[in-house]
Length: 171
Image 1 (cartoon, rainbow, N blue to C red):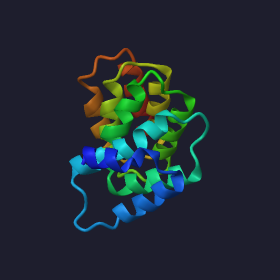
Image 2 (image 1 turned 90 degrees about the vertical axis):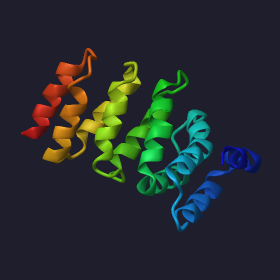
Image 3 (image 1 turned 90 degrees about the horizontal axis):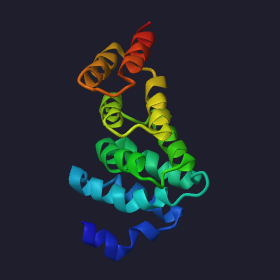
Image 4 (image 1 turned 120 degrees about the vertical axis):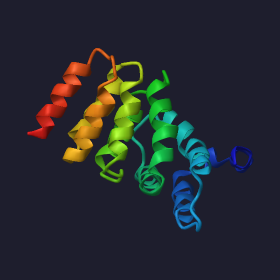
């Protein structure tokens, strides 16, 4: 799949072409495997997002959101960690990640997985902004308990603050 993506130069598609391709990929039956979807997310979105110098276009946001709705896990694993760990990530990339989180296109339980990924990363201002977007979403009691379980073994300096934020959300 990686070779095919490189040969087709999918990372060079204009945003309109990206949206059309994503729309077609979302209609595939059977659906893509997690590994193929992850490779596609990296090929279609990662470099494109890292190279942004201004806010993402509506077409890029629409393509990413639609792909995330069907392939949430691959989008989270292929974009969240790599974007938050890349030294080239700046406000424009974080704005797009926060948009994706706040858009409510994520499956509810993916919030727990995303939080688990975020708290394991090196802490930078960008990491905190994504974490804040995650915690601002409406969460159920079940999700709150899942988030608490993710935080429990964590040793980050913000552990107590995050636990307090979860208690505040429970009110």
